[in-house]
Image 1: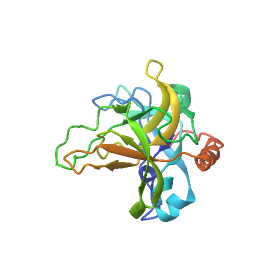
Image 2 (image 1 turned 90 degrees about the vertical axis):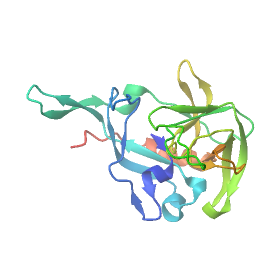
Image 3 (image 1 turned 120 degrees about the vertical axis):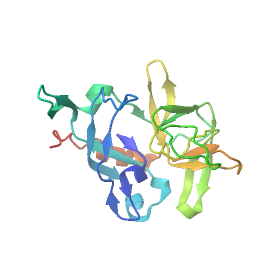
Length: 223
């Protein structure tokens, strides 16, 4: 599955995230209707791992077969296999080399952090969407971001990182093509709320990283 590089690997400490799991379609009270998927391997660009270069702040995580907790009559729990992630929830296509301003994108995420003025309009439990904004080239030299793509307006706060950007998104079928991930939030007008979010530009190199990840096999159940 695709995510932001900083959601999977801490380049400052040169170590992967610990206890990394993915829960698709979570319920409001912690339900896991489609299973729990534990990370097994991270495929990323060497410039994210080695330099924390935000031009490469993306990663593809191979996950174990999923499981749910099954409660026995005596109250004990065991892990019940539910199969592969893509078999259970499907997947999106991948789009690369699509220039900003030439498409409409829908960005998704679970924002949870505070806005610049300290308010917290998001609870981190509800899937939010930014759709219909304009995409622009953007840069942040301090973060080695030379070729980012900014979506504006979008009021996502921290916590939305790693959420997908989908082009040609069909809301009825919930399908589209992935061409970015939430990487950085921006307060460009210096007011009380974030007004933009950015992604690394997905180019041919991104496609090569993805192909390496796609060649990996799904590991068995985590124990």
